[in-house]
Length: 169
Image (tube, rainbow, N blue to C red):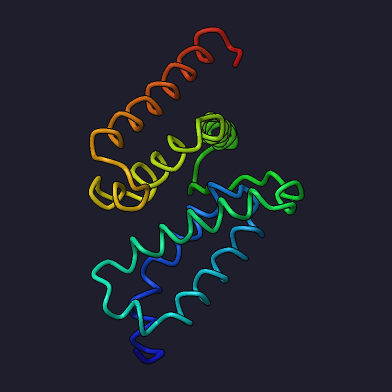
């Protein structure tokens, strides 16, 4: 596989790799480093991956494993909490702040989920992978993935309702 073919295969899902890495590592800088490292690993094994049916699923699995390794390492204590900037055109400052607050609340609730649920909700609801792909990435049966996703969504929904009803988290 030459460089041009490699880029055609890898570039379409590069942002998904970054978003998963950011969800797991939290820090933008760590996620950028992880994305760069994973693309470099894919490049080194480009001849092997040329025969893979779904390089994207393979890359997402690599991302998950790499991030878990990073979190287990001593450097995990140096990670910093950084939230993404969400931009909307032509909305009032109040609406922007309200929207940003809601987004931050959901992000915080996702961060509190068990690791498995956190990954599954990221892959399904944010990255829009189908269940078959998620099952391969997390090495789980479809029923288990659906149950974990359902529980994650229910937990987030209940926490948001509680916060909106009582004004506290």
